[in-house]
Image (cartoon, rainbow, N blue to C red; front, top):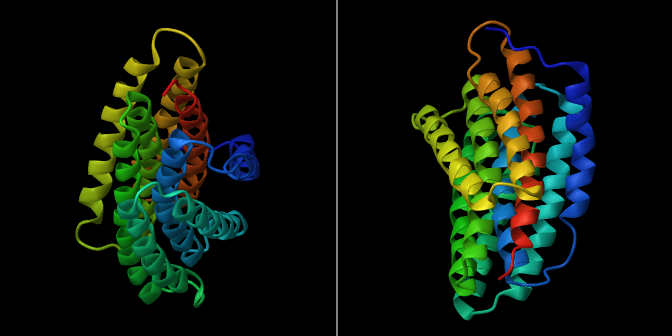
Length: 264
């Protein structure tokens, strides 16, 4: 079934780029803020690959380029902040290792115009960076030792899963996916649904968190439908996924920010 994305939805998806990138630029204030930023690094690892694959297919080129450029700049900035904040030698070592992995990934992203050979490298390197970014987030959550920190981590991981699903969808569409990509997309989908249910229960029966997660739920319906499109006009479907993944990301950024403010 062809899923139509209205003009205003795509306009909104463009506008939110500047909004959430600006909101992410505040310095690390406490452990929950650190967990949030560490979790955002996971998301950016997937978002950059998604944008690269979209550029390779000439999908929504102007916005995809902005997504890639802003994500690279934000990853660079947050990596410095997280290294400086690291409260233990073990956590700092993780971010030093991430810095090395990031250098290789960044070179693949910007070293040449997007091409299929480069796309295969980007897919692999995005997994390496994700692994270390996830490790750092888990270490910070453990250091916090609080339920609030755990919820920030879970909510932050939802951002990553949204971009991970889009990454694999675009990789399959471009023909650069590995054998595990379709399986990983389906796994991420199931994990997103399960975690959303857990977060809804934690949010309570009323208030800003409940409302935020309800908005995420509404965006998920659209995003899930876009991911399910096969055959037909592949370029059109890829543009649907590009737009929907940015909209659900914006909603999840709001939700994570609210979880971050919970008492520690």
